[in-house]
Image: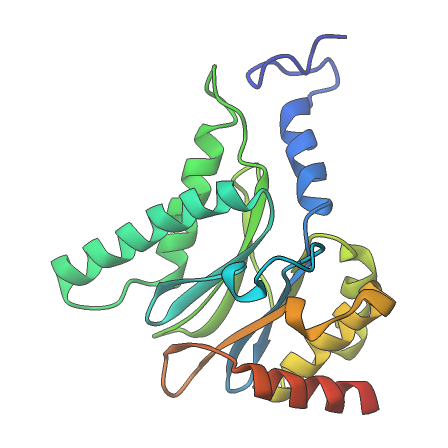
Length: 235
């Protein structure tokens, strides 16, 4: 009793309860999927637009960090924007200082360091958000996940947010390193269809990719998303 009142207090069984509450917030967030493919890396996300009066284009779920990097989030998106702003600043400073793009892992570590500080400082609360960070650098295409504790892992394919368990099962079954980016997006759309069911609507879907050759963050046009969604349905 009372062990969840402060972020700096461990419970008798060695847990930081406020951090665990933040993880639960992430699981209630809208779904985001990242997949590394043979020719690049893709993001497929659900913007969860419930109110029909909301302009869907005004809801941002995928963020550009640098020309060769992007990210998406699940949880409290206002928390995500703060972290994305810090990541964008770091990437810009690196370009100005070294005249070269920053490595994806350096940005991930920077984000994770900020999150970790908020798990051991009084008067703060953990960031209630997990991020999927994608990028293409000298090491090729990569995908990282950071959670509210400040831990990060590199993945071939990952999902955060609502329906995480169901989509993870699909990814484990269907993922292959030989997938191209179109197939990766179709796989992500299939996962969203599985958990959203009748509420699946292309107006709430956002996709982006970075190709290994061009190394440029690109948002997928709406017409292309619709085409791939139809093909994923047939599959």
